[in-house]
Length: 398
Image (cartoon, rainbow, N blue to C red; front, top):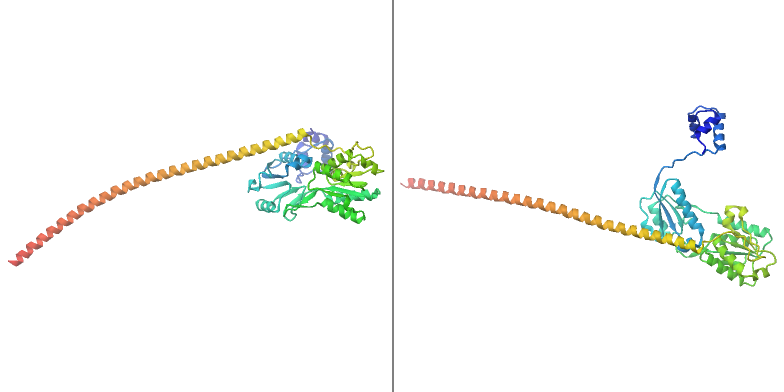
């Protein structure tokens, strides 16, 4: 691994000078040539500046996907794993919450959040009250409230239709899924379908018969719609498929339905927007002439991998349940300790009150005794004065 000391030796300056230049210290006095030489040498020998990330706490990953989505589509699982990996690398304390946890499980002191999946309008508004610093991955439920990172699917589909038309295709089909309305939770038109309709309408080749839409983007849905497509009398010469998972199912159905090649003299072109997003060189074209040979390299989860993910989820849920029960038990214990403490305090207060009462009783008895003695003295004085008055009256009578 390249070091600052090596750079200093090659350039002929001190290690301190190299360090200050690489840290963009404007106070160091070196020539422009030396500065350029330091950066050029660092790049040449592969020096990588060590980055120390400050710790960021209380960041949540809201993984609000359906079990079926995660098992059927590697996109979600891949995004989750990469977020966890990058959070660890960048010293971010990340806590993961899924739909089963619910919005109430999300702490009120969040620093920020990353959201993957679908949230309802009610959930979004509640989330905004909890934390205003967050970003959605793959979806953009409310651009006024939160930022989002997602592919430009409108552009992808437009480019695919443009490509097909340039290749001479006029019978272009579309197989896709539905979006979700965040206010009602009901299926709504996905942007990929909307873009396809706009583009094919522009080229005057929009055909409703070639548009097949499912509620979701699963392999099973793709397979079912591929079978539906094969039942049609007139078939498209090109297919635009909205996702990799749908494409897997469609290709399976097409490979099973050998009649498709009898109808098509040339080839059916399939392109996945996800592959096109990664690199145009990786666009997938499937020649259906030799049916049974697929150039499509995407591999869905195997049954073993699905079982592994299922076990991981169940384990996580069991651990979270155990933690919840432990927290509840702790809360009960803390409440009992608090009640005992209060009872002890009450006992102490009661003992103190009893002592005060005893003291007050003694004081009252003392004062009562003093009052009794005082009364006796007053009575004696009164009798004495009455006796003296009587004697005076008797002398006056003589």
